[in-house]
Image (cartoon, rainbow, N blue to C red; front, side, top):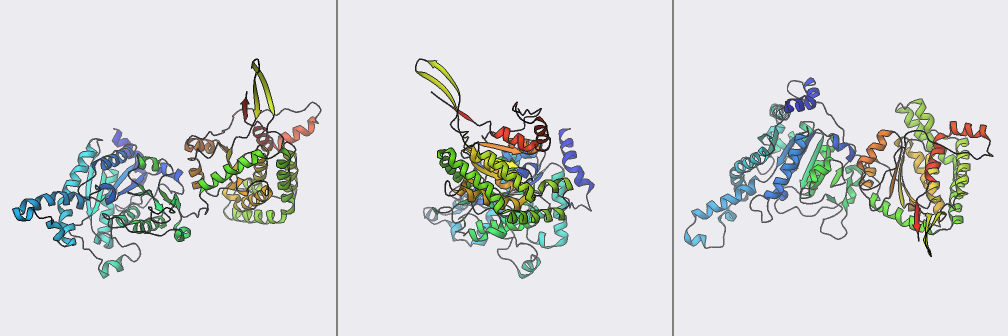
Length: 588
């Protein structure tokens, strides 16, 4: 009953859109790591270096068993899993070497020469693949049986992709197996596959990639069956800027092929694989261009496949969105360094910074409004609702009001180091509660650009480093406002004390950096808050306090004016009320 239910949930929509045995629908667009948890059709490619032992002889059973366990867990969650596996040659080589030794004479068996090493490479690989494919598949079958999952072997050649009829049959077969809750296990038929491409095959593949290894096979399969996600698992942690063994090589957690290609240089491929990192990048980029999410990662990481699908910052995620040149972890470190300097400033110096922020809004109002008009024009073209356009818009009047608000915040720059409460614990022992900065804040706010200067001013006032993520609709407005806020920081603190985060992918990465970020403040819907809370790893999230919010008014204040302000400036009041409830420390 459970199997039938799982199939109805996952496959019903695809069955409805079934067109002559070929499925053309796609469920999920993987725009960020956070989207991976919604992936339903996933291909896992296992490289030779991951599956084989270090001596290139036989299969690494521990790593293979761990991979099977993770794939089985995802399959039993209701996803459709497909494996592209290497290892048949290594599996066959182990047995054939023993068989060769048995056929040797006593003289030859005592010789250090290995008979297989004297054979031609093509013959060696073909013979080993023919013998090893059976044993490897039998091993997979026994492992998956432990999780009550059936498997099916599919051996393919290049002609299966280059010939339209064969490609259509392969597509229909794989879709049917997936819909029957079977895990297809694919490999190239190395026993008969030629070592080089023929001219006809190269011409036939001119609109795609030539299948030279299992990386290209996995990419072609991902596009063929409309997979949501392709995981290329190897023995390296992901894509580096250079060979991983070089000291200055840096792991890229996000890679945009169109923008970041100049950042990387490739080293030698592994001694057991047929591809290499250059092949993986080429195939991953091609799959990305065909709307398949791709991650290159290390298959030896504990629960690596599961954690990738859950959106954790593992391996290299391929995206068409160009990321900032400065890695997010570096931005977080610089914000922390800046917050330490900021904490040491006097209240008067922090006041000077905030007043400079206010004056920058007025002095550069034309530049701000020009950038804001660009945001408004693009939002109008995309059909943004009038109510949202109104929130997005800025004006001279808004900027002047905003500047006045920042000046009022500047007058509260003495909030740090204030003693809130004293308690005498014993003679000569006094407990004090003193206001102190939190550290580094990550603030995620909606498409309201006038929030950015307010948040920046409150952050400086309370002595905190700040990472900002605004709505994508206000991209250009947020960029110029951030620059103006950063300009005001100098010469007191580094301008990197405040930084702007551009993409959701970078936010997902930052939410994994608990050692650099002290508090996350999402300003938006309840769905946004819950999503941030779910992704956050050991970082507290200041969520919504649902209910009635109270703002206390001085007895001598103008009550009518306070009511008008409370009605029309609710968000500003609440933000200020929340932020000025600063963190405290206790001293004895």
